Length: 194
Image (cartoon, rainbow, N blue to C red):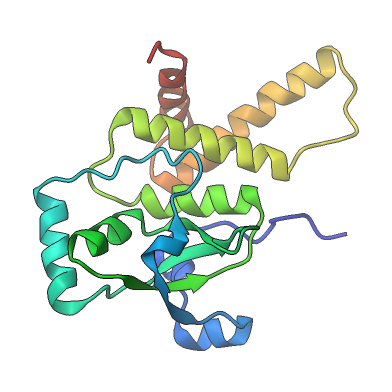
């Protein structure tokens, strides 16, 4: 039986944003979508800040349009949840646009969290608190995907959970260009009082 979400390892924008030929093979394609039908990702850890960079992005979109499509997934109510492209959506709104190009991709919650985190961790300016929340979301999603049902409660299960947590932190760190220990330090920020 195939593992749920086993094909979600992402390392670059090439993995996230496929070519037109690759999209045609999977049935995905770029469509223009009303901004009102796109909703932010639930518990999105990255702030969309209305600063000078955002105004430059809005000016660019006003002049050239959105050059890289966002990625969304269908919601039960017929609208769509943003996976990648929160800043582009906001800049499009500032630019007075009513639509933007998107790729509609079917995916489960864990795969969506991992893709959302991976696509945002490549940004230049990320607060440590945002990185901590993103790492936590990705760690939980990865643990759900590889969760073992055969472990019994007790010392052996607890020991395996600690080892698994360290392995996941190492894997997340490797993809992000940091050590697993640094990822663990970021994760500790989530324990602070808000």
